Length: 503
Image (cartoon, rainbow, N blue to C red; front, side, top):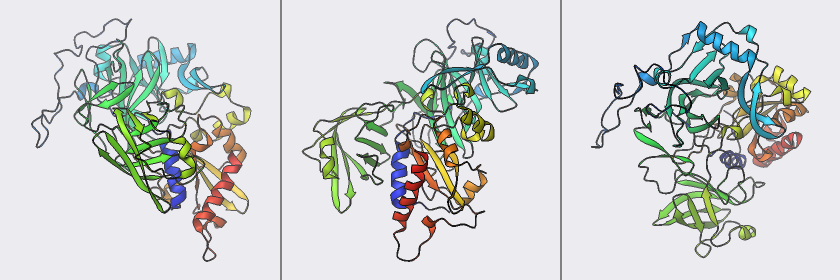
């Protein structure tokens, strides 16, 4: 099993947490009878009103007198049906107008129309719309043989996120703007399994994650929809202050990333990540080891304490609201003296809000790629359009001295307000065999640079993961201990050399 040095791991975890604050996913509620404005009711014989009988139990929590909400199950399950009508509808739109998605255009995110889908290769189209959505809207979900999911709304087709397989769907006006949005539950991942709950904002034509769990590293969750609300593990999902929350959550300090801007697109230093009862303070992204430790809450104070080097430290904040904490300089002892200027008394840090879909994925828009990028996408399509919300991992291996091969995978760490962190690439969390099974295609440094340029990530959000490829008889210097050597230092130097090849 591949082992990452402690220093490299801590840095990787800190980097992984920077963009990982995504309000992530699992199917639950939907608005009863909620329909996008401007559409006419259809199939009114079953409109999701009182005639629809909730079917799911159990009704009560063991050891708890509070009744669980009954939820719809059969009504929200996607029913895949091959249909000539669906095929004609989809092919007609693809030929006339293409399909729409979100991609990078000249360095900025925008809605892009793709008109180059090879419609001649489409042999069948499946209508995957759940009975609930079909009965309450004109929205339809179609799946092509290639695995591409397309959402039909008001005569246009919208691509759902890559590597996402939908099993349930419903309608929910999550932001109470009078337009019923589409909630999806299903699986995701291009190699590692995720359980995902996501909402497609019909007005913005963008996706937001409600919850995501990598099920090899964290327990799955239960989701439900009772015709009016979405539930996770029996608790109602709420949209408050531009964030998804779980009703009745007694954690008055939500987990997540706290930054001065409250904006994941403009984090700035210093910032603090809090998850479960652990925290990380990031004062300098160029340093591979960050102060980290335990979280203690005493009344309206949150105390972050630990040991950095040989000295104990503590960062004390006053909880000023559910989403903000204010630094108390008098009660604090910061970890590194030269960073004292960052920690002014009263510095307010705010829980960062979720990111929109346009901030997550690499571009697959060939028309806006360089010729080299377009050629690479033909040769290595699995390296494009990945979910970069948590950053990316560049895997590097050598088959001979001076010969470097690179592969690209998603970083699967998820940090959610109110949810646990799951870290797949924690050093001990991925084995050499795992990487071998991914069948990574090796590209050279220049080609990997071109691929990375299609993603909305900085160098600080890319982890370099050295790999001793089992099929190679060559062992790079970073793995060779000639006796008494500092192997952590050797690995850091190797990673630094590789990083300089890419950035």
